[in-house]
Length: 177
Ligand SMILES: [Zn+2]
Ligand SMILES: [Zn+2]
Image 1: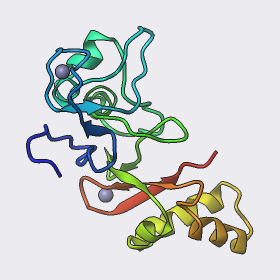
Image 2 (image 1 turned 120 degrees about the horizontal axis):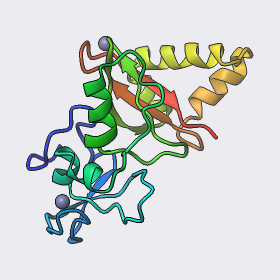
Image 3 (image 1 turned 90 degrees about the vertical axis):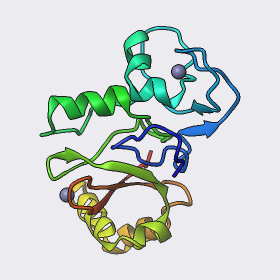
């Protein structure tokens, strides 16, 4: 974690996840060169290079000025309107094959940790179990195929790992095509 960056409740280590990187580039919103620049998704109908500094993301000024959102609110069911706004407009998105979205646990959005493969996922057995359950629910009925898919995560499709901001449980979804 990088101490001088603003704190993002739902994306606590955006440098570690690759969404923000060290750069001399100036921010498209405040035009300052803060040493850090955003590299991931931004959805807007305006034509803008979404190179924002972390501060313009954190205070909502980038989303407001360019009328955009950093990620889809798809799947954020049962969370408060305040949380929806914070995730969509004041939290860095992330790099994913599909559009990034957030998971929910304990009626709050979970914190995005990063894109992981099987080894990292297996370090959090509850996340692996939950993912296995979700895939079964989505039609993966062949157990050996399912295990093959899970153990090869990170070699093609990967998993997006989250941690509940309330109880600390890890959870994940797969970013498969
Ligand atoms: Zn800025
Ligand atoms: Zn929880």
